[in-house]
Image 1 (cartoon, rainbow, N blue to C red):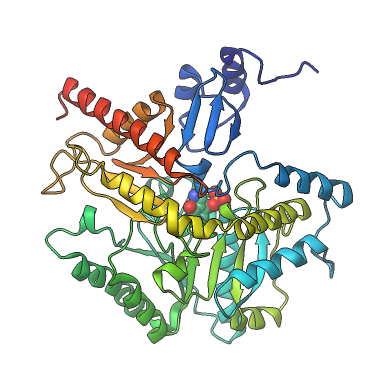
Image 2 (tube, rainbow, N blue to C red):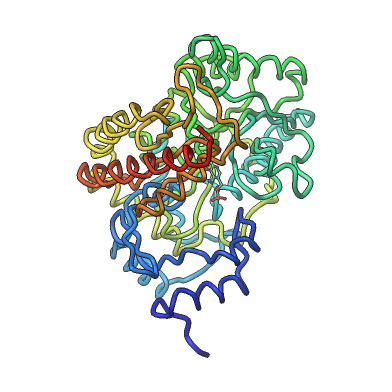
Length: 461
Ligand code: PMP
């Protein structure tokens, strides 16, 4: 078989990619015309592409490479585990050491009372587990009509039919028959984008009260759970006003509905604590995890489940699971990732060095004429772009046009920043140093200046 390697010319790799590989969230024919960017290797916070460019990864892959690239310990652990036990399942009264060890370690790090883990291979799968788990929980407790789940517009919970239904992305719901029945979406706490004349505090309360209104509309006896990201990630790093989460918690407590915190991005240090729920002061019954659990070195996710729910589910046969639930290689690699995060005090680094440095650095961009605001929580941040800061105005072009231009200018300056609509997102590896943050900001400023010039050229400003 002729080998396809990193040493092949970029154009050849692009042609083969276009011929056979269908990309996620992509207009593939357009990409085939243009040619995909080919990433060949990575080390620390830097990616290398097939043209030899050294690109600073301001997104940690897809918000996941928390410990940075190139950690040989992770490869060593994977190789050892593959030699010892590359695969076995956890169905049929069977278990293995990597799954036991990882479940115990995760529950040690999780908030009190969350002592059980159901494994999956991704955040989407874990949220599908959650849909079935909360409905089964209520059915087992004698409330089979408690099936409705409330989520939020512009939430992201995955791309499978179940998790995509939980998510609140209308462009996803437009394809493939989503959402499934019994999922409802209230408005998000995006003060900058939707707060109008209200203060952030008033707006936070108003948006939280929509949960109460929805519960009353559906009937308390029909609602199983509310699901939300502590800080919305893929929706554009929406940091809710301080008033929001306490009010949501009060409402969940009052009506006795389960709270699912989707920690797929926030978990494992991104907000400076192990979980975003701790940063935002929530008491969830279930937490969805993935991404930072293995720093993306292996596909693994899961649901961390509280004692009460686990006990009720445990009394029934829960007819759910995946071939790769608790996959031994993925579990061993995740365990090594948790060891590195703990032994190298990565969360301390986030709290005392990286997050303050990132905040100061990004604040220096808020004087730029295009930057309307800075939303930041730990190591996740966004800069909404605007033609007029004071009025928080939107651009006259289609939403996302300006964000896209800026993202392309970032790439041209060897920086990965993602755009969500016209918000620019930063979510780098947690191990990033202040010097590397300086590089990130220098490149981001250049990209913003070039975006400004291009908007003027195109008559968009
Ligand atoms: N939940 C959240 C909050 C996410 O950000 C994501 C992925 N971006 C998911 C779930 C889905 O995870 P996956 O892509 O691993 O299925």
